[in-house]
Amino acid sequence: MGGKFGGLVRGVMAGNGLGQDKTNGKSKWGTLLAPLIPYFLGNGGNTKGAVAPWGSRDTQNTCPYTQYPNTGVVRNYDFTVSRGMIAPDGYLRDVLLVNGAYPGPLIEANWGDIIQVTVHNNITGPEEGTALHWHGFLQKGTPWEDGAPAITQCPISPGKTYTYRFEASLYGSSWYHSHYSAQYSGGVLGPIIVHGPTKLAYDIDIGPVMLSDWYHKSYFDIIAKMLAPGGDPKVFSDNNLINGKGTFDCSTKDAGDNTPCTDNAGIAKFKFTTGKTHRLRLVNSGSEGVQRFSIDGHTMTVFANDFVPIEAYDTKVVTLGVGQRADVLVKANVGKTGSVFWVRSELTSCSPAKKPLALGAVYYDKDTGATPTTTAWDVPDPGTCANDDLALTKPLYKMALPKPSFTKTFDIETFVNASDVSLWKFDGVSFRGDYNSPTLLLAKAGNLTFPEIWNVKNLGSNTSVRIIVENKTPASHPIHLHGHNFYVLHEGDGAWDGTSIVNANNPMRRDVQMVRGNGHLVIQFDSNNPGVWPFHCHIAWHASGGFFSQLVVQPDKIRSLNFPSSSAQLCRDWALFTKTTVPDQIDSGL
Image 1 (cartoon, rainbow, N blue to C red):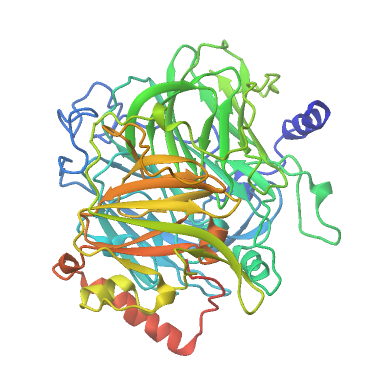
Image 2: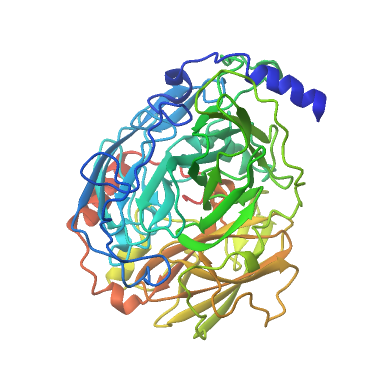
């Protein structure tokens, strides 16, 4: 690795060949101009030491699912989704941007606030629908705001606008992204921070650190090739980015590729203050790859996974599948003023990648422009693509596992259809949605009979549902459930033994968990949130290939929910748009 890595270092630090507007549009993430994050949103100024809006609620004694605050404060955001041309790693490509930025603008709120986001679809040349999903938000009482087209809404039509409004009933770090086809792979994503209580003290909140594999082809072209007769379901990323920034060796472009390309486009930079403790909000916002994040010489203290505060533990490497988050603390006690260290995020060996290593730099007190000479931790990739041992991850707010009222097994399989197209099956079905007929709206009308290809599971009035995921494929998968934090009972190689549960008196809870290749994952959730909730692999290409299902929870109570008229208007607009324009739905739709 030495010679190859040495060349990479020289290229990375040779100077920034492109300005921030050329690499990331209007985004400041990955630069020292990115704002530091306050302890919570107050009336301006430093809120450290001020009375928090959540009062005496804390991480250990307050049930986050039933005792969250209601501040009455509405946080308003206005987003425009449109096309643009940027070069995050120096390779110029057509992208989709939120407010002209990649990554997109930060959504920030306090625990118990209302978040309201008006989304304008300005995608042209060609036109596309869109919809934004607010990852990890429970959407209690507002399932139509979940942002999954064909499931909870019709897409936002080109030229139209929709306003999402939902509670910040959980707190921590997350992200938003398009859920229309694999559109977010083209750039429609950004960070979310909901301020809430913490058990551990820190001095400085560095903010989001978004880790994304990156592709030089458009998501549409990738899917068209993947889902063509005889296509290869394995998609290789071209690069790996930290906060939307990286470098690419333009001499390695494919023969005949005349795309403008600039070496040394620039890497992500961070600043530590000597002696202070810093909070970093790690997010895997990629399309496929499992990330292993580290900072040379620095130990990280993990204190939250997804939206769940946990008993803190120290680690040198944090492993995140797509959609997963980790809040970590890092103390700047390794160097001195002027020191500089490599920040690394490397795609694991089971992630198809042409250039797996992303580099950034953290400077002590000031950006000296110096090249780091630090060495990576000697923590080899275990090759399992699994998360940290479940025995390590114990929620601070303890919840014992209830007895399940219903148990079901979901098998993960691949197959080749009659057209010689490689697809995925989840519980025996390869999903394909209908943008014009969202399942939730049909359930609201009392229609609970759906086409098989929609892969709908009606859970009825069950109160606690256990799902055993059996992976019959050699690939690992980040399994995500909308609308819930599920209990993680067990994961490992082969089949589950049917009895083993890790920390049964207080199992880990989160909204995404990795299942190993040819392994198993056992989860359980309290099915008390009426709605229709996607349950799927968060690898964009796998979801496009049919690895997707939807769970109808408490259907009788869905009918009593008060849907806004804007929900039906979305579908009227989409019906009018599709009357004259046939969307090229080349994949599952999600």
